Image 1 (cartoon, rainbow, N blue to C red):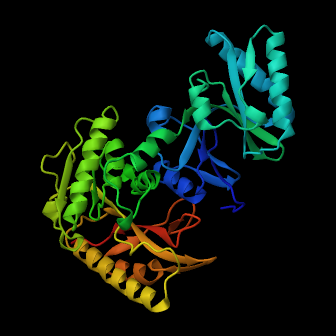
Image 2: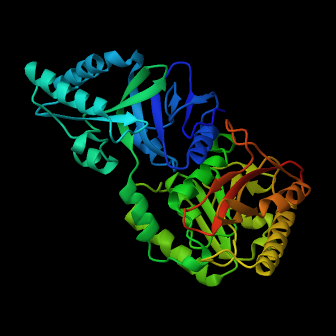
Image 3: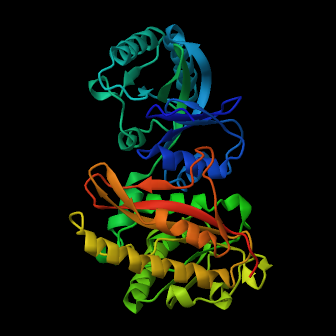
Length: 426
């Protein structure tokens, strides 16, 4: 894997380009868990050759780490050919749609001071008008347009939001945006839900989606269940429901279970068109260290196959990570906290090992504490002990790493994601 600050995964015959989010390693790992035949290279996005599992917008709605999907219409062009090929494409689109041709150009990787973008926009407008097309570009100050603006201007439906993708060696690939991340829906699910509790952690919906996809949905039944034994306010459960999974959630705190129930009821009403009607929900109060196989069976299965007495499932969870911290803790406090969390996690995995079916995926978050550029990782102390209980940590293809980091710039506590697979039968 080339590490140049930006990434691309390249397939032999490109058809789609996936523009990555801010945490590119998470974005790459998520897509790597869904698409099996990819090879790595350098640069900025992910390219895929083949049919998408769903319509582009529906598929993007279930990806937490991708901000945009483009359909490729020209590849590996010399930069000198950009103007001609984009003009030809926009002329074709103008014939398919009535009215004024509103278009935008976007450079990837983004260059906010590009004179090339200014030149292309002004020349395209002039050339299109000379050919009888009433055309205007939507780029304010000759910069990439925002996804929200592109969506509101109707550029997606007309396929006139054009991406110019630098693929190196003086070559570019061109694509038209066919799907954009719905930032407003994410914000509503994050901040608009009725029950929130910062004291137990605020897992972002996008990160919850990534974790669910990292469970490798291709390896479990299409009607599988997502089990979250530390469900808190229900973020993972909510995102799993929107992705078509049935869900089982438990937490030892009755107040949080009631809050999760409120949030799920709100989700089913607010996003009623997005939640499949046959999605089953099971919520109950219980300590994660005492769950049984019976707890992991939905009361009314919706078509999933029974395996070893349990509905086909994946475990996706963020456990208690410790109290919120505004500054790096004192050494004695941190040691005590790490000891307590280590015991909690080991007890949980030990109990889970008694009944979890072989090959079941467990996507789990460990905390780490950061001070400047240094990190104090709990996973480095605990993962080997968890493996000794009958699990194996897996590699996130194509990155060749067994853990993924997520942190906010101003936070003290970060998240380290590890995926285990049960390897020993109970």
